[in-house]
Length: 177
Image (cartoon, rainbow, N blue to C red; front, side, top):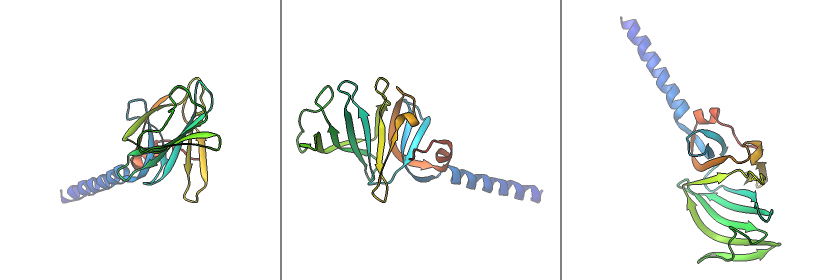
């Protein structure tokens, strides 16, 4: 009888350790969830203070728009700049209070933005499917991937920065160059 109790205790300890190992956060990531679900579509490991860009081709004037973000200490996403080539639907014509509007290198920049998001709803372009994710590595080198390499045109996502578990890491699709 004592032998069975020891085996049950050992199995319980192993299962508990395995659960902790698989479901404890192992890092921070930019996470893409399918639509309004908790179904992980992909993730990109990221750290507090890291910057990234979501670049899309505007569906009307067909030029690139870059939205620049930084990961905050409380894992929010702060939009700090928008860069675009042409005015049009959805493009700002000026800067708001505390922001800076400049024209540099043939592009319009709205800088010093302080837009904070706990999550963002984004769509991989359907009509013009040229969305990209750009980030800078620790060495300062820029890396870029096309959304179409990971997602279907027209797909919708909820994007967040969150602690990711080993279980999600193993089950998900890591975005990398």
